[in-house]
Structures are given as structure tokens and as C-alpha cells.
Image 1 (cartoon, rainbow, N blue to C red):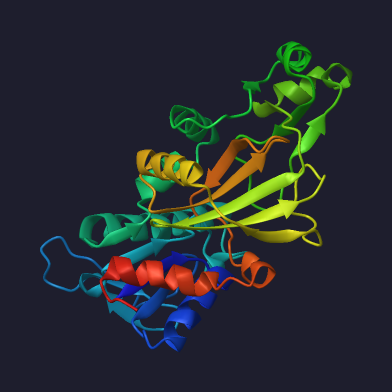
Image 2: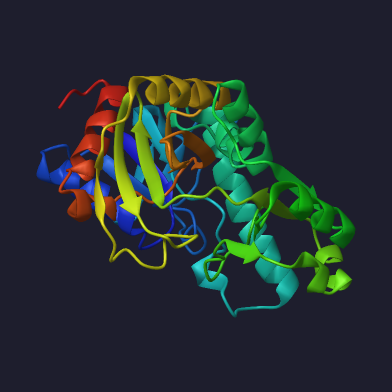
Length: 314
């Protein structure tokens, strides 16, 4: 059995489940982490194992963790839909925290299958600063980077590296926060810098961006050609398949292995002379948008990957 932990109406989880069903694999279930509250037949575990350990699925059933062999840890941090706007703030926080903690704890205590990828590795790898250090150790060029709350430090950094971009260290749920230029940091109020640390990086010139999807030992990449700093707002640009060179594949595999990830969605930028510059890896990034653009069956490739972890074959 394959389990996916995600949120309600996660299109990636739904599409991958439907792809598995289309191929005849019916033991694929979604655990909606934001719909634990209000389920009397939901999460259950006992320390003496007198009752089965169960989790609720999106189709209104429960399944036993002992039957699961692969767990796709896709999305976890979400509040409960059942208590949105109900009760007072303390009551909502109690329900949200206890639902999240119970699911986390039950999986840690009772699940013994393969993780895609483990919560510990996923959380650690999401640290943008740590992954930059790991990528550099693997032989990738990485942009010169400064994390600071000081306008003076950012001004001096800009003098050293030229054009500077800024992005959040972690970010927040809600609207996407796109990468931005910081052309004249000296003209920005000091309070804006002091509010919280941010990531400042040298701008890597070039118009060729690579979105590399790594599922186990298989890699599928798209080349996105645009002069935009952040390609995500506009996909009406040339996007073609990119054959991953062996040396890049080797370095990517080393990074993911060090990070403890079974999969990763990686952003790379190519310089004018073709040198790949590592930008970041998202342990559970979006990849299905590339399927129609590349005419590459990424959903099937991902199901193949999950089934290989499950030992169920194709």
C-alpha cells in the first residue's frame, strides 16, 4: 500500500493517485492532514498494540499503517478545515496542534515502510542555507550569498558582487513571494532590513533556467528560456526537454544523498558558457506543470518511482 500525506484538493496527490488507479494499482490512499478533526474513525494508536494503528483517508475510510509500505510525505503543515472560524483562538490552536502532533507521532511510532522523503530529511533539506553548503561540497557553483538584517552589510555586499537579488529565508503560506532585484540597497529604509533576516545573493546572468525533477535515480529536466529573474509568473516562454549531463546527474545525486532525500525538485541556472549554477532544491516541489509543456509523462514516471519503492513493479 502507498500512502500520501497531503492537504485536501492537492492536485499533485490527486493526479498521481488517479494515474496509479488508471494503471490498475488500487492500493493508493491520500491522508488529508487538514481533515483529521471531526473524524471519529480517524487517527488511532495504542502503546500495547491491543488495537490496530489507523489513519483516515480522503475517501472516508481508515487504513492500517501495518499495510503501508511507501509513504509519500508531500504536505503536512496545515490547519484543520473543520475548526476554521470555530471556537476561540486557544481552542483552534489546541485542535490544530493536537491533530498535527497525533498524526506525526503515530507515523513516527508505528510506520516502518519507505519514506519519500522522511520528515527529518525533508525539514533539514528545506533549509536553503544548508542545501547551498551541501551543493557547494558536491562541486556545484553556488551564488555568493549573504544573510543579514544590516543595510550596511547589504550595501557592501552589493559593491562586491554587483547586482543583488533578495528572497525570503523561509517564506510564508499565502501568495507566492517572487525573487526580486535590490538595485540600490542604500535607498531602502534601514527598518526594512532590520525587520527580519533575508537572503541576498549575487545575480547570476543568463536566460536559461533548468527545472530538474529527480525521482530516485531517474532525472527529467526542462529548459526554460526567459530573461525574467523569476520564471514562475509566466510560462509562455520556450520550454524544452533538457538532457541532464552525466556530471550534473552525479552531483545532484550526491546532494540528495547527503540531504537524505529520495526525490527533489531542483532549480539550476546556466551561465552564458553553460556552467550550471545551483539555486535550490525543493524536497516536494511542483513538477506536473511540465508534463504537457515537455510532452513527458512525468506522472507515470513518478508512479513508477513509487511502485519501485513499494516493490510492486509496474
